[in-house]
Image (cartoon, rainbow, N blue to C red):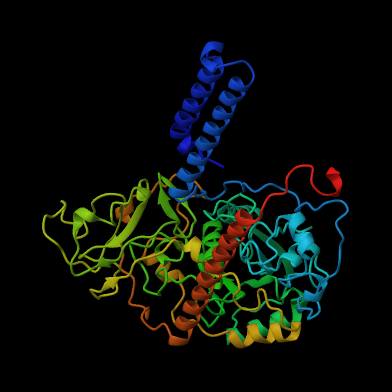
Length: 541
């Protein structure tokens, strides 16, 4: 679905295609050739041309990272469950793999027979056609007596399910949990994600379910233990292979940290904004940003892309604290997003200001934030040259600047297209173990993060928060939002977490390569298979 920002370009292309089609159809008969076949050939050429135009438009949108949504933008995914034929057989599935299922004609053991997969256009050689860690059969038949298809799941479109339990405190004027505007904004971000799906429609369908009110606890401490106990008491373990579990809580570990993921990647997280804004709870912006940030950790994302070095100007993502509660400035509007395209590394000791962030055309309209030698934070256009040292001009010589305010001159590593690197099978998601084992595995994988999550004090220091309403034009002067973050232990990512994330990414790359190889083999086999002449066989006799 295109936005009005792309309307002029698309209108020109569409107008050109229509003029081409009109000229072709209005050409004199003597130019079209003999009546009948010539006009049909001409029409076929027009149709082919229009198809190429459509492909160009789609490629253009994808090349530019898709269309990010400002907060409050409605979701673009069509409503209604995934449709199956009326005579399609239904069966009950369990998340534990049935060892006899292959004998029933289900090669990939996903709960759908090969013939059923052909009818539904899923891949009979891949148990998870859309790569969201949920088996195809689960998304068609349901699993563990949970009708995922009725809840909006599709085996041809990525889905993420989140159960949101919540605490309540009457004195919290903003509430501890989300209102409808917060939930719609989160849904819109994922619906507009630049992610391809087998059904041909972009985006991720995120299913946010308000769950149970849980007993109020002013301070979860130790939070891993108390979170696990609340989950054990209130979360239906049949949901463990499908649903992320989170709690909108008050606070944890005695501070004002905005939230925490139970590990990276994982299936559990907290949002804890109860002590923010004089104990009134988080604003809508703070809730939107923090929810997507902590879910991002569940999905394998880190504060610096693929590392925990924070405040990087070459990281245009809500995973950076500088954008978590304020959003990223794009064409005058604040958006919530993970980074949509790769950006190059920055060597802080040797910066060429004319190069900026690489002058990538995808950066046009974006702004980024960096720290200057005088400990101020500047928000500047990201697509051109950048005055890193705040000298008032673009220097012809290279400069050295601590761009992320950590008191070091280091290389800020390149950052990826984060949407393309999401890890969907964190924690218990996609588990085919027994339900008890799936729950226990998620608990055992829980670890304190090796970094301090964003606190209200730090958020204020970097000028984040709630100045602009969701999706509204930013009215603040970026140069008034100046402060230096205190030094945080961003370099203390433990090796176990680093290895686990790298292993998950490796598995994803291998799976993608296997799918590509399988598709190539199938195409080659189809080309080699001789075509039956029409009229042959019993039906033609």
